[in-house]
Image (cartoon, rainbow, N blue to C red; front, side, top):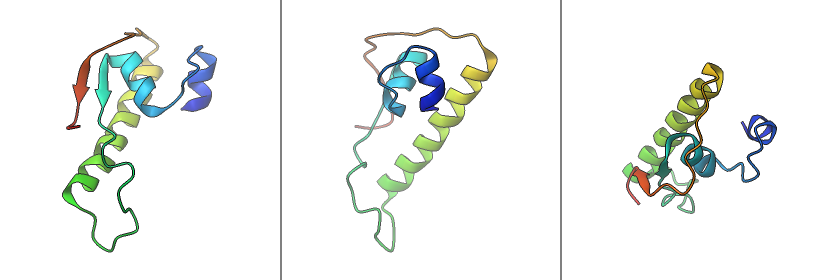
Length: 81
């Protein structure tokens, strides 16, 4: 994903930034620094992982379709922050 982003001229190739550019919405990263080695993941961690996977799939489909529209400086939000 990061390699494709670079070919499109996207310099900040984080998942959150690519998603915001393509869909005009922000992805919550609130669980990023939580304990991912815990025996049982919290509901928040499970939701975070599912949202990350969904965002990657949505980005892949958008890039595969070839109809790219970048939406800079969006204030939208996806997930809970």
